[in-house]
Image 1 (cartoon, helix red, strand yellow):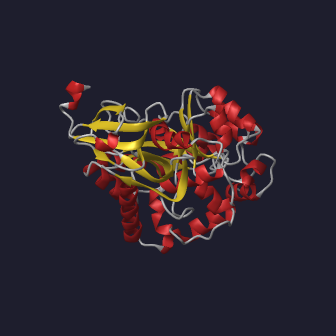
Image 2 (image 1 turned 90 degrees about the vertical axis):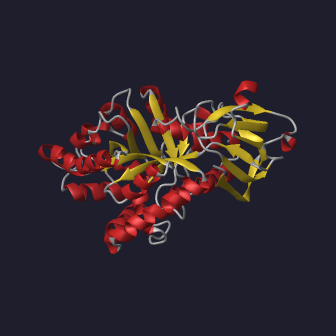
Length: 401
């Protein structure tokens, strides 16, 4: 460590540090090079009196990853009422989306990207149906800030002979624009319910997928041929959905996608043990992303965080969009989960917000933990009751660099 420290540009210390193994270490110090690269991290007594060291009162964590976001919908903030249920929520989004000019939509995306960065979000898994969010992402890339992985989303209930055409009309313009801009992007299916069988399978060879999964009670009813989403999808197609023979959402996933798919499943609110077990026993690389405040906003519902924690599944956190949330704040998601899941240690939730999110997007070689050679940024979590290791009402995160 002595040789390494001679090249250190910045030493940052706090009463607790989130280590790369997901544990909270007392009296942690991280040594950074001038370009933000981690040289090393260690435990050290009397950190508040170490020479040439910044001392911050809180928990020092690496930059966070918002593993599920719709940045392009940032203009919807406050426009859609809460607790209306998924079908009415979708109706609001469809009916109101054209009420805002392109200029307003782009400007709001730029503002929210900057807000996420200031709060300490280092990377984002972002859903795109158009290029509204691309200017914000290009600006972030050029300024050396937030890393984005964009998921070019497609959906619909076309006849088999129309599926390939729909797929390419939805995806190809986004892939081409992203290539021109230098943005990382992969196609993804929207969900396991608003996709014809052939269209869903057209995305099976995508290098990385982010699929809305069992988000709302109406999805549970779907394979029983009842409920609001079933009626909506059947009405849009003008016929019975052609994938009901799978019998369930988890069954459809494992029958349609390869075992080695890099799969990110979003929400999971209605997922039960048997669904989780089927998925974990089949897929080699799957992350379950929880967006608890969005679930509460739409359906007054809660994700199965405790079940996933006890199963040892890889869990990450997302904010969803400002059409179904009051802010794109991971600090608020962490507070919500911590408050409503007292059986889950704070350290685990912080690991979900950092390294696990980076793993879900394929960014973990560069960010997500304080390991030598990475450039994860540094974020301070304040408002911590160190006796109980729980968060207070005024807990928040702030970027140190």
